[in-house]
Length: 207
Image 1: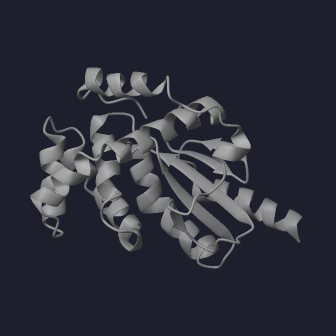
Image 2: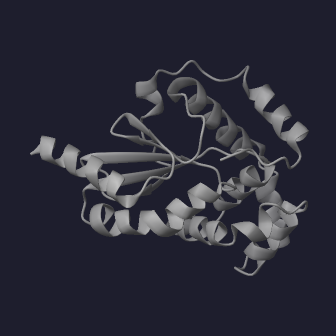
């Protein structure tokens, strides 16, 4: 996933600010799953998959629309995999989309993630990405006031960007999607059989 040059100076400014505020976490700490994270599956599943994704990344969209549904059916819904989604925005539109998702409510996080991925081409390359995102969210019932409050939530923005920098520093995340599967990194949107082989290998060792 290459960075899309939409307001790059502004976004780089955000990143540089947080370079001085990132706590010196150890990998075992950053891999700890917090209660407010976006999670699918059994909390006690033997396999934990943490995905780092940018909402503007076409490879991430492909994974979510084509591969994740199979993983969900075969491994998440059967209690074998716990799937955790983490934001890794590569540009301002991706950051805006990540923030909007956080405002829709925990029970529909994945519904809106999939919706924005499926309509990615309609908003991600637009100079007015916020306006395009509002059109999409307004059709789902979000008011302009709610939308503006969400995008102006500095605490949420800080949390997303600092989490991204922690992942970059502690886990060397450089591309999206990247997956941490029981502590081991897998980069890129791999075929479903790659995930199946990894999962089955872990499950065999856990017997």
